[in-house]
Amino acid sequence: MEPKFLDDEFGADIDLTPLIDVVFMLLLFFILAASFSAPVLQVALPTARTAAPAEDDPARLVLAIDAEGQLHHRGDVVGPESLPGLLAAHPEGPVELRVDRAAPFDAFIGALDPLREAGRSNVLITAKRE
Image 1 (cartoon, rainbow, N blue to C red):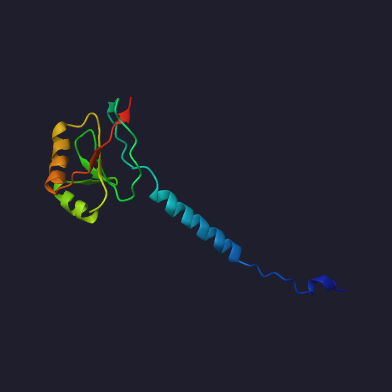
Image 2 (tube, helix red, strand yellow):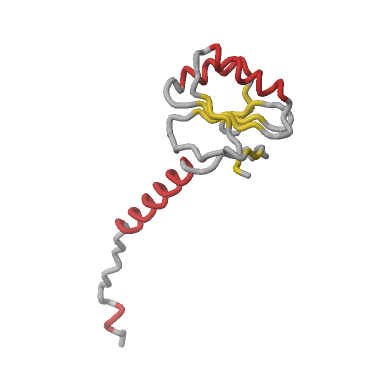
């Protein structure tokens, strides 16, 4: 005698819609979190008594100069000759320079000269408050 419950058909359909919704929400979260993350290159900023926080601006072009004097944009090393292309890609909004306190002054001037030649007067020099 065979048990009857093995012959019954089970409703074993799994609805994947909630799973797909959760996956898309996680994907959206990680994309947005990555776009608002802090810059990759950590720079030891100089201190200043008059330093004030700047407003967040998504159009801001952020450039960093490390202790060796290399210019960085979004973690990639760029040369001063590529600054006009970066400025053309970001025509509006300020330019923020984050210069390491141990960086040579020539590297700072090497980044500032192309900015001034391009007519950009909205340059923010970042420092941390004492």
